[in-house]
Every structure is written in C-alpha cells, then in structure tokens.
Image (cartoon, rainbow, N blue to C red; front, side, top):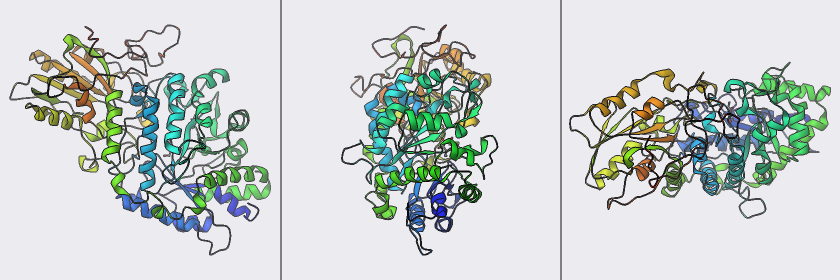
Length: 590
Ligand code: GLC
C-alpha cells in the first residue's frame, strides 16, 4: 500500500461489469474487480461457450497485472452470481434453488453443493461467488423468496456456515481459499427478506433486536466460518438505505461482529443513498462500504471518488482501510501468485462442468427437496411399468424447472439445447417407465389417445428474479385456472392425478390440491429433473427407490393473503405448517 498512488487505491475499490468495462479500462484505471451481472456475458451471448468465459477472465487478469505505466501489479478479482451452481454457464450443474434446499434440512449436503459450485466456478476463471443468500424471507410476495433457505432464522443459521465452507474451504485446513475454492459474499446485509409488503429493495421497518434475531441470523455463523466478503443490501432499515447505514455497516458488522473482510455493494445500490448518484457517493464509503458494485457507472464513480479522496471528503484513513481489506482477501486467495485463470489448477477443465459426480449431488438434492403435501389412497409411489400421461407446461421444460438466475438474469429465453447436462422431469419419468416395460407419453395440454393409468401433471410459476417476481398476493397466476381445468378434466375422466408443482414460493393452491390425488411441492429443481422420478416411482422390482424426505421450510398458506404467516408468530394458522411433509408411511386423506 505504501507504494500505491491514490489513483491505484481508489481503482482498487471500484467494481465494473463486463458488459461495460474492458480489460484496457481495468489496466488504465487500475480497477480492482469486475463482475458478470445476470445478463452480462462474453460477446453479449447468454449461452456463451465456457471457453469464451475463461478467455475473458484471462484478459481481465492480465490487464490488471500490466504495469507498463509503472505502478503496482494488483490482480483483479472476478465475481459472478453462482447462486445455484455456476448457473451462468452452459453445461454447469444446476442445483435446486435455496427454497428447495431448505426443505432438505441437510446442512452437510449444502457443504457438498458449495464445493461443487466452487469447482465449476473456477473452471471458467472466476474466483468469487455472490453467495450464499442468507435472507430470511418473511413475506412470500417477495420476488426473491426462493433465494432464501427458509422463513426460519434457525434453518438459515444452520446452512450458512456449511455453504461458506463448501465454497471457500474450511479455515485453517488445507484447501482453504486454494485454486479449487472461491470467496463468498454473504448477502444481502441487512434485512433483505423483511421489507414491507415483501417489496424488493423496499423498507424493512422493525426494532434492531428483531432485525438481528431474524434477518441477521446467518451472518455470525457465516463470519465465524471465514466469509471473506459481505454484500450490502438494497433495502432500507427504518427508512435509511443500507448502502449508507454507517451504524450497521461499520459499528455493527465491522465493529461488534468483528468482520475482517470487505463489504461489496449491490448493483448501483450506492446510487439509492440520499444525496448520491450512481457516479458519485462519498457517503457510501464513509458509511463503511468498501467496494461499490458500479456496473456501468464505474468510470464516473472512480473519478468522483478520487476527487473526494483528494479533497478529504472521504478521509484517506477510510480509503486505506477499504484497500487493506480488499488486498488482504486477495492475498488470502493467493491471487498475486496465481497466474492467469486458464493456468490455474481447474482453469479450462470443462469436463468438470455437469460431471456425473457433480450431477449426482444435485440429483440427491432434488430428491431430498421434494415435499409431499397430499397422497390420497397412498397412490404414491407409482409402479413404473404403467402407462403415464405426463402433462402440464412444466413437464418437459428446462427453463421452468431451473428458475431465475439461469444463463440469464430472469432465467427466461433459454432452450432445451442450452442444457446439455440435464434431464427434464418428463425425461426422468420416461426413462424409468421404459426401463420397467411401461411408457410415459408427453402431452402438455393433457389430451390423449391411449387412456393412461396415471396422469402426472407438472405445472407452476414461470421464471423470475428480484423485483420482477414481486406479487400482490399468493393467488397462483393471479387466479388463472388453466392448470386447474386440466387437472379437473383428467379427474372427470376417472384418471388418477399426481400434481408436481414448480414454484419459487408457497402459493394458495387449495383448488389444485383438491383436484389432485397427490400433490408434491417441487420448488425449482434445476438440471436434475430425474430426481423427481426417483421418488415418485418405485424401482423395477416394485420397491421404494427413495421415500420423501423434504419438509416445508416455508409455511404453506391457507388463504391467498396469508403471505406473512411465519412459524413462531402469534395467530400462526397455515394450511401446512413449517416442518410438514408426508412420507410413504404416512398417507394422509385430505
Ligand atoms: C443483483 C442482485 C444481487 C446480485 C447482483 C449482481 O441486483 O441484487 O444479488 O449479486 O445484482 O448480479
């Protein structure tokens, strides 16, 4: 640091997005970090080749180490939303989103998921995952409910350290922050899941003790597990934007909680601080944010921050503290000696993306995430050698079963060909039925020629992310009954109906549940759709392959306005309670 100019110090604290910053910019302005936002890809291609990602990582790294203008070579660090596997990359293993993982209650599995995610992230040259989200969603209208493991602070607190250690490795043990691990950003600090009406980026209004007890639950165990960065949240706390909240960012997180890593901002979140813009915000640095995420505003923010550092509007002591925090993390990560990403241990080992071993972890996660809410007459598990009608627009639909944050920000606009290492729910049922001498016929609209023995109807929410997923109540599809009508048609034909519901949150589904003989909450399962068949179908000899294991980590509503009905609250009266989940031994007549 003693050798660094103030220009180099300020550059170290700015993160630009690959959609607007070039390697030449990184070299010229000594920028310390780049990110790939949900819609930022090499060449603007959402399904870019993994090799193009790695080449881009190399270019940015080499630019950051170019000292032709003199100065200190400080490697840039590349962050990405590897939030359910390295989900931006074609062929990567896609894990169930966090709401499904919460239903497994299997913290040890979270560690393995973190490990696999870190490996696949390193293959394409990034050293940083913007995960885990330790939000504790309290209002299911929030478009990011599915990014939370649970409405229960205890479940989130039990998962956070496991995911941190999976991604980073275990402090003090071999492997910690080595070339097969990445740094984390525990997010979003603080109160992201507690906004009024579940409005994304809204205001979280409650006492600080309740804020800590509910929304802070994941941070102490994550920090104790060695989390190297924390991401500040868009939301306000009692009217004050978190990106400008000195009490919580500095006094609490860095002081009371002794957090020694660095605080990264969210996407121009600093621009929402009173008196700030995306290009100018001394207040966020003075509040304790160390590295604003300045996707398209990085140049203006660099210039204004440099000016504020020179004028003393941001004290040099604050600049130096932030730079020291960032450099310490880069040193712990071994970035100074690592060489370019493609030359590192996992760089370019594309066979690891969606490898059989990795997909097996995801398939186990799918199995353990499924929650059985109804099983009248013990219709499940199904003998596989029958004739199945597999209906609904989620049956053979990778886009739907993967959800948001998949190849693109909203997870939309993708095709089956974008998922070479994956199985749809239909494909899983088809393969197991055929292996047992049965058959599965795909019919999205449920119409059939040959009368099936059983209908499996896969339907649910279309992908969304962040505020684009905010809804006014828990009516499914705002009350549209197309899926309900399909279920009723099949029931009217006397065909047993098994519903598999794809969603990023519990919704009011009483009518669809009543029209089903069995009803399974499948959440957003990701690439391993075959994990659903592993549980629904018996094995070829008629035995149980895998019984249901999942239990609700979010309460299931009795009415469409029971969106903030969480375990432990007064007047708690859900349709299915937190912790509910049937097994084959417990068929329940509903
Ligand atoms: C988004 C999200 C944050 C993500 C970041 C980078 O707006 O709030 O979770 O890590 O921007 O994509």
